[in-house]
Length: 394
Image (tube, rainbow, N blue to C red; front, side, top):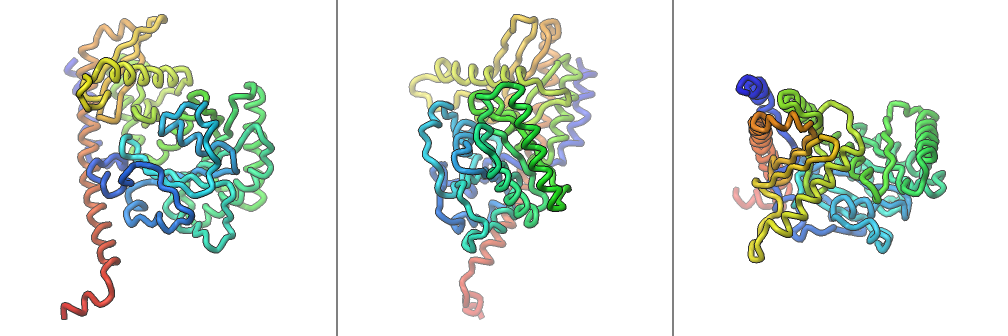
């Protein structure tokens, strides 16, 4: 046990110097809306947060009207039932929301109305695209998508000229009503047309990622997980830590989950099975629901998920699911055989090493974030000094 744990611990020092650029508890007050609600404005002047472009990645949700953009946001980040999204009104303003006050993942989501006109001189698209990490374009697979592909091409080309580092993600949405063969056919057709349009414009270097999504299953959560992972600069470090953990613990598969959104921040290098991911999401729901019912007393205002949270589920195929708290926002969910779970002491020891390594990465990252925040505040305060202030000191 000691040798295996030591082998795992050798990686901690290498990863300590890496900053993990998402969760910073001290930054909540400075970077989130006071009420935590969606901040909708007619224009974009209200979005000129002097710190946001330096701390938080920005994810844009774009697409034609009624393509399902707002429904995706509500289901993934607000736990809204998919059936309730039928009553959502169509978005007619740019809506910005900070996803950070109750979740590990920390970024801004900007939900754009479908009628945005890039040629409108009052629309400062350069400012928006300049601070964007990912652009998600949603296409309604059950509708005629010729106009959507035309808008996708216009949006991507405009954004790429401003910021070539944007990740372009295409959600082929509302596929729950299609057969498997029809889904594949739709994806192939959209993929070909979109890339042919870029090739005709001499922009073959632009890479588009395509996902089949629906709010009625876990495909939208998995797709969003892939999008968010691309915005985590230390993703290889987390994958490496997970690989070392499972190889020394007899574990077959491990996920690092954001508990609130059910987005998995990282997983080991083995392929992700959709059924496995769905089981993880269901397990998290079970843990939170049972904790809400039985874990808190009537007068206790605590969180249903804390450092004591842990769950073990034995499936009927000799597989064991094991959930452990990593931070107040993160959970490690593992799959292993019953015979491997007999060495639970070894697994818990290696988990302790894994958790310590994650915490050390966080500590360094927090220092980086605080320094960056301080520099941003100083720069903003200099810009905010009214004219004539300096002359009064002379």
